[in-house]
Amino acid sequence: MQQAIHSLGDQIEVDLHFQPFELNPAMPSEGQDLDEHLAEKYGLPPEQLERNREAIRARGEQVGFAFNMDKRSRIYNTFDAHRLLHWAGLEGKQLELERALFEAYFTEGENPGAHDLLVRMAGKVGLDQERAREILASNAYADEVRQRQAYYQQLGIHSVPSIIINERHLIQGGQPQEVFAQALQQIAASS
Image (cartoon, rainbow, N blue to C red; front, top):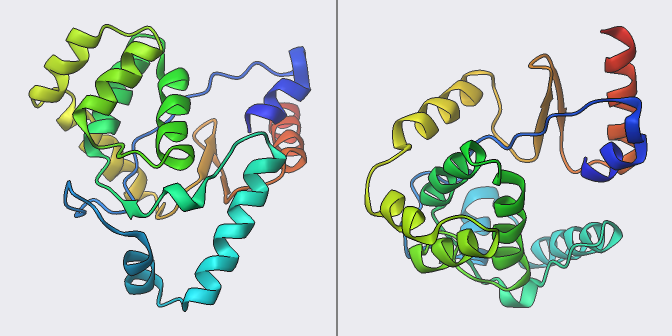
């Protein structure tokens, strides 16, 4: 999506926001073995899991993002990351924090629910680390995050990525840049 936005230049004005969405809200903080989780959730055999990983790695490579599958062996609870991302959005740093957290998890294999990582990533993108610690030590933004998650679940969204444009148009799945660019142009032309 970001590459599509960039490719369109000044043709379309875009205000991009990430919304909270947990694929596994009941996941314990210590997480679960990734293969075990995927086998339980989708019933996929190991060979299919490997093919899926390779497809994701290749798609990431096409857009300049490194999915290091060998470093990512667990899936974690991300609720606190979503609370911090909510705050980062209020501070105008949501996109930067989202990218830093994606790299920490998908590239480096770190736990995106660990408070020390969240504080470190907040500092990395220029957010106040002490304020990040305060948020994580409290229940700050929990209600807002739960409300937004419930809203999107009520709309029938149960997978990521799900991209909603102008609160009316839904594009699901990791699509090529051209698909997003074409959709943005069509939506802008019909507005």
